[in-house]
Amino acid sequence: MESNLQPQPYVVEDRFEGFRNSVDEILTKVEKLEKQVVEVEQYYESAGNAQGNCSKGGSVVKEKSREKNLVGTKKPLQDALRTETAAAKRMQELMRQFSTILRQITQHKWAWPFQEPVDVKGLGLHDYNEIIEKPMDFSTIKNKMEAKDGTRYKNVREIYADVRLIFKNAMKYNNEKHDVHVMAKTLLEKFEDKWLQLLPKVAEEEKRQIEEEAQAQLDIQLAQEMTYANMANDLGNELYEVDIHLKKLKEMVIQNCRKLSTGEKRILGTALTKLSPENLNRALEIVAENNSSFHPTGDEVDLDIDAQVVMFLSL
Image 1: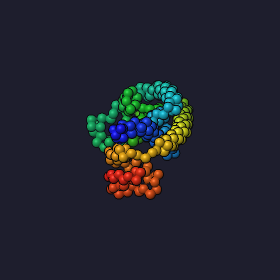
Image 2: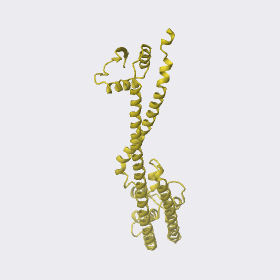
Image 3: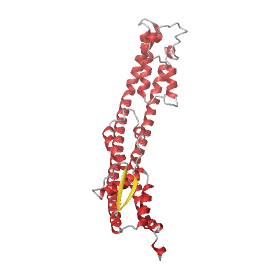
Image 4: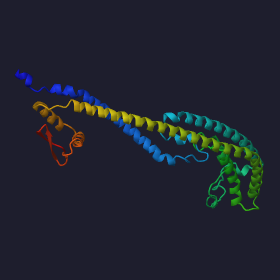
């Protein structure tokens, strides 16, 4: 008979095992929800800076790929990629037409001085690099048009600017009566005439790209807003469910409360001393929430359990 009166720790452990599991599940879920809440808050804080990120000639897909790829934005991003691919093909066609103009200019009998970089040292042009800030020639343009890396021309206007630079440099360095100046001026005029024939197509394509990029930007932004709005709504529902669950757990604990035996008090006191500082502080906060006279301050705290004092260190 006497042995039946002895405290049985494993009975106490079994009794609270289900409760602990429920609490652990809630803590895991709350941690996940907190991360989602932070993500939603960060989005709405930065939403005002999202507009105007894509500059003219930029890539909506590249700009948006820097952000987290949300499920709701996949389709708009795919649409933007298809639009950019189509625009790139149209620009390649314009470059092909521009290449025809360029070939006509480079094959002119007066184009030979501009085919290769100026031989500054060989010609004794010691002041050339002081006068000409950015040297340019047809071979450099050709290499840049055929480049496979990031140095390649992105649009026709970039090539146009470098071709003009060839002739402008020659006219700047050589006086008006110099043969090279006359040759450069003549070729520049011929080049500008041919460019004016292609310019309407270039302007039309540039306008179209701006409109398409703006639409893609808007579609992605709307998709993001919808995604985060749905996420915020789901978070509200999940947090409400967590609150309900916590209330039920609290009611369950209250319903199962009874006076602890001496052995159970000893087990509880021992268990409290094994808690981490963080969990111990939280436990004291829970006690304080339900007992206004209890103040968990100082290095040492007295916790009254059914009029039995258990002393333990809090920090």
